Image (tube, rainbow, N blue to C red; front, side, top):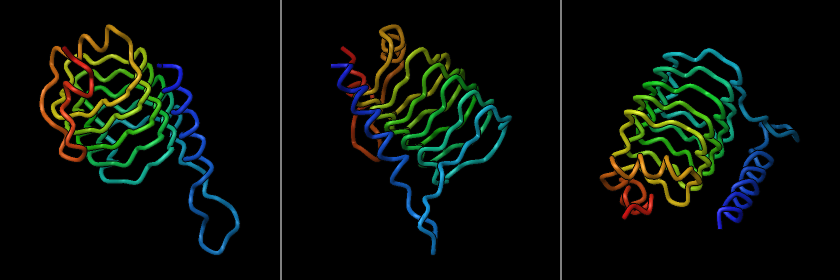
Length: 165
């Protein structure tokens, strides 16, 4: 089952990357934004359209992504200590090996997101939607201990989206 979810994620990511809207009066597609290996501490991305943007190996400590559209974004091996992702949409994003220590993921949508080997020490996940997210068993156990609330955008309870018992 996890293999099918991963395959579906990769297909969706490919579609997102190659179906970006064309630039005005141009037959070429706009490339996804790339912030790989960037120093983005305290950067404000709140409310921005960042679909399929790449933030691999970036330092995003204290960055603000509140209500940002990060569908299909790649944030692999990044640091997001105390970052604000309140209400952000990370559907189909690749967020593996990310350090979320003290981050605010409240009301965020992480549906079908790959979260393998990411750390969640001291995070706020109230109202976050993790429907069909791919994560390690240890992560799931840790998140279920603090899961509460209902996502205001999807109407899904955090505990239900994680499959907590």
